[in-house]
Length: 523
Ligand code: ATP
Ligand code: MG
Image 1 (cartoon, rainbow, N blue to C red):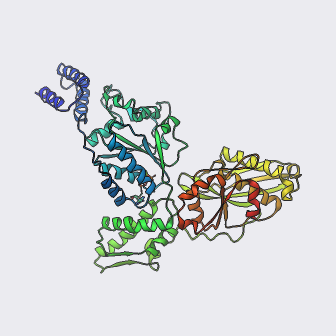
Image 2 (tube, rainbow, N blue to C red):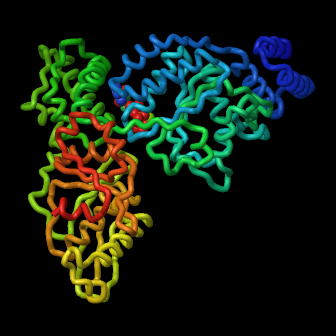
Image 3 (cartoon, helix red, strand yellow):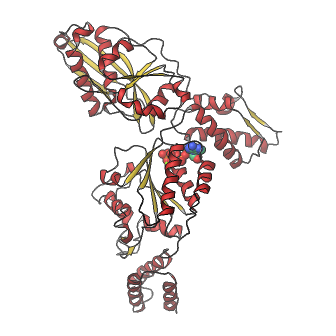
């Protein structure tokens, strides 16, 4: 009787013919077994999986582009470029459903809306959404499952996700694809490659199921904080969409329109009961957060709302007003004090801009010289690329010593010490090149650099300033630190169009083509 029930369920599941054959084979084996044996249990679990997978179940796409645009706008402020790209993608799907679009990959610092955009896409298509974190995943079996050899073995995470969704065309978000690991248990990225490859993924074989499952209807979206750790073959399959981070004004607007109403509601406050104005939001952003995204802002607003909810619960009369006067009693001592730019920098110190996984950051480079034999000493958490930049900076200073009035014998009778304090996140990359040269010249000429100036750019041995990444993130960070001037490579000119007017008013950005142009602007 159990067998009949199973057979009926298998019939209903809508499996492809070959799969059904395999499943019936297993059913036959089960029939011949002692019902309580452990082998029978293994087979029964397998059959349950097979029956419950959405072989046929599919949700109909809502491909109404206007409606999709409305939903994206309802969930997210601004991000015009990103939304446009998503709508184009959906339009192509609508006009040519057979076309296998590229896999979108959202790249940006934490809390800029990557995950929530994915959710929004699913909502606008009327599909199920599933988020899967790949961070720290090292075992291929996590993607592809374990062979059915023992009682505890299970399908991999892709198949699990499909069962949870109950439809074979969900939006699956592969979060943190840049943090994928690999070790002796196999390389999950090669399994992922198969999952994401439109040529292969219509017959993806999970080790546990041991039959192909068609993933071609799944829409995969990836997210990452940085690109450089994503395996190249995976990256080749993806279309990268960058989400760089928000200005203070943008954050205030997002908070007013989205975060505050949501947090107030979640914490049981009705509309109009909470008063939390623009000025206070700016203060929260400046004094309690330091981030490109909105994660901590959301947390702090949540904490304000809980405190107000308590007042309400204790029957205190509303409205509950948060003002710049009572903010500190509510949230406690500010975590970040407004960064006054340092009044003066000592000779040998220059400020650069770095691009880290959590967004832009200012970077101090300190150079001191002392009597010695021309040794170059590097300390702080410098990566290899930055060490090479330091070498290049030294070669430049040596070659051009005369022009700066530097005694060229420094390479024989002085040691050079370059220090880059690590700060919260270790930094590496060639973009510190111009800052290293500037700090070096400043130290050798004993002339200080302007304290409100930041710079970024790679240098070539011939003294050209080469373009670098993350310009918008870097400018956001520079403005947040109160910097007034920024020098960026001339070849990054094209990136300036991404920088909002609001920021351009607060910092003067100059383009430089050659290293020689920097010093006159810096001192
Ligand atoms: P992580 O890298 O840490 O996973 P993330 O980019 O996935 O970060 P989300 O979790 O999507 O970030 O966003 C953080 C919060 O900020 C969410 O509550 C999201 O709704 C909100 N948010 C982000 N960007 C916007 C925006 N442009 N408009 C409205 N809300 C936004
Ligand atoms: Mg996320």
